[in-house]
Length: 240
Ligand SMILES: N[C@@H](CCC(=O)N[C@@H](CS)C(=O)NCC(=O)O)C(=O)O
Image 1 (cartoon, rainbow, N blue to C red):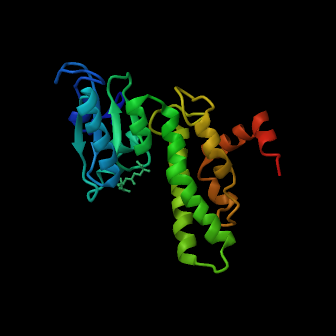
Image 2: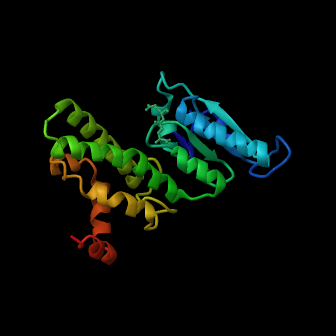
């Protein structure tokens, strides 16, 4: 059950994180603060190191929760509400109302320097979407030899990534469907959409993903059509 932004089973230390925020020099206060949900993997360590460097240099205060990947804490509803990609790390900014969740290591690192929701979706596509769909295009269409194992692997992962965008755009965990990837409420057209759209809208290039399979992503399909209608997208894609 949801109790506002967090669920009943969201760990208490995540919901109630109370520390000083950026540039605060004392230790514990009653102010809501930053909370890192992590595990000490390479991606977890990227952000753990970054926030410790900021702590050492600027007095940034934060608390953290280590979750268990083997028991799939990162696939539970309370976690997916914070990061529909189901992967660590996630940075919670409890100074915001409602609290603000940042996913994707590079976006978290930049958020720590400057808040910007569109960066996480730009990086999500850059880091998780295009490398995978690019491999599907190669193995599915361009390679001389057909490797069914590779095709299946990259197709399955491409569809999983489309599912992450579908969760985000559908508002499954927020109750409000979105028109664009970043920004408050329904979102605002941004570089996150521009960075993702050419790849997502070209889902059929590999010849491996059918229109029938894409019906599982109705909000993503509407997003594709919505952006396709923009004059700059039309003129920008007519150059061939
Ligand atoms: N592109 C993501 C990758 C995050 C990622 O792959 N995290 C791994 C740990 S290094 C994870 O949570 N794996 C668990 C899973 O996939 O269920 C980022 O940079 O944040």
